[in-house]
Length: 256
Image (cartoon, rainbow, N blue to C red; front, top):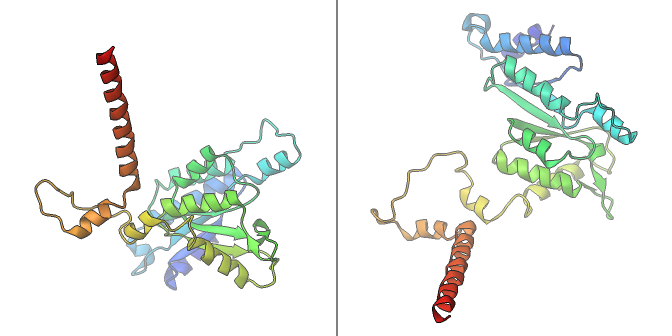
């Protein structure tokens, strides 16, 4: 049935397909094999059509792991990396096909930074936000916790803004547009937009020609871009402070 659905999606020109990740290992292996066959099929199978890209929906944290935490008795057999291991299993079978992507669904509280860094290393192109994930501010509007705001800002930086939001669940805050308005407000906020991102917008993941300031005459606009590099000037200050310290030390030693 899944293979026929893929073929039909390709036939009618659907470019992305979102599917759930199964729980048991046998179904997971079966689904991964079917996806791999779709990616490796010859052109005769699809004719003039291109197989759609496939998004795998996976929760950020294992529901079993969350349940064990809420019971305040984390069982040794509960693996906190279960969801990532499932994704990694599918990716290995499909040989990291460039048409395989990850749709990450937020659930519970964000995991520790080490586990988050694992997810940030994956091709997350969709973030699924259940309405139950949102908190309610004093004005009765939906907001996300600071931890989730920080996670989304990290994802935005890693993916250069090339990912989508999908809101699911019952409307818990008046109107669905309130969720959209909040996400738009957050994407234009200080966590997402800073001085560096404004200058580099449109040039993410693009190789630039190496500049040769000592050989070529660079215009003033290029030097204005240089001046936006805060880290460079911070390092200059650290080096200058260190040099001043050692210069003062040698002077004191000489006097002594």
